[in-house]
Length: 209
Image (cartoon, rainbow, N blue to C red; front, side, top):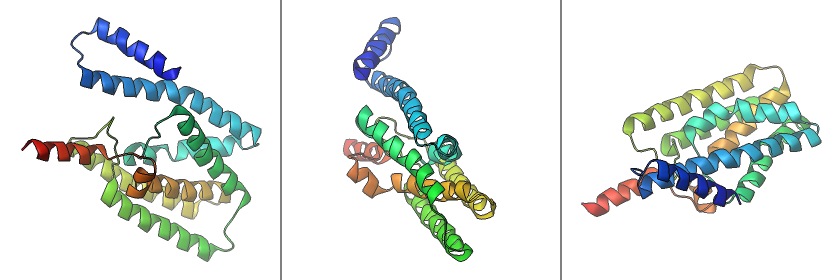
């Protein structure tokens, strides 16, 4: 249903703008699918959070990690249903775990924060920005900016987690940053049948030489 609606919108756009070729149409279609798919996913996520009695924790889990996610990238699931399920598991799950569990002592918390930060910095250095075949990030300038911002936002997340007195918010930053870092790794891409757009672009360039 969603795909049919998105295809209909793209066909209408192409009629109004005949200069749009098939390649550009695919990019437009992907963008529309993301927008249309995000709206119900967004409301379902917060609705589920409200049912769990975790509406503000779910909201924080979503918005606090948004800057890091926006610049570091990550895989995209192929179906809207899979995306909805994954979104609820990630954000509502983060809110739930962060609310019911706390570190046994400060030392364990500090070690965990340091471990998540080191792991994240290494993965960002290797994979960020983690793009997809549908929306590749091809310019070196944009890739460099997003990589640098990934370092910055991850570090800020861990600094806030270290010093903020509220353990729930601190846990949301720690767990959310760890999950987001996992989403950019090669193993996550393989498990979700994704490929890095920039890597595929370089392969195509080499093949044409």
